[in-house]
Image (tube, helix red, strand yellow):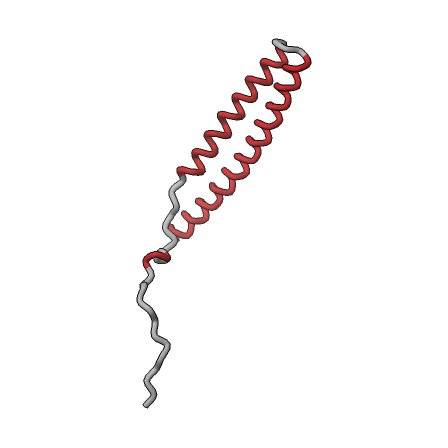
Length: 97
C-alpha cells in the first residue's frame, strides 16, 4: 500500500504547487502593474515602495514554488520504464503445420 499512497501524496503535492505557482504569478502581475501605476502617478511615494516590496515578495514566492516543483523527485510507479522495453523486432510470421 505504501507505493500507492506515496504516489497519491506526490500527485497532490504537484497539483498544490501548480495552484500556488499560478496564484503567485497573478500576484507578480498585479504588483507589477500597481508599482508601475503608482510610480507613474506619484514617483517615490510610500504606495510605490509598498507595491515594489510586495512585488519582490511575490517574485520570491513564485521562484521558490517553481524551484520546488522542478526539484520534486518522481516516485517509482512500479512499472518498467519505457526505455527498458526490448528493442528486438517482433516477428509476426507463424509456422503453420
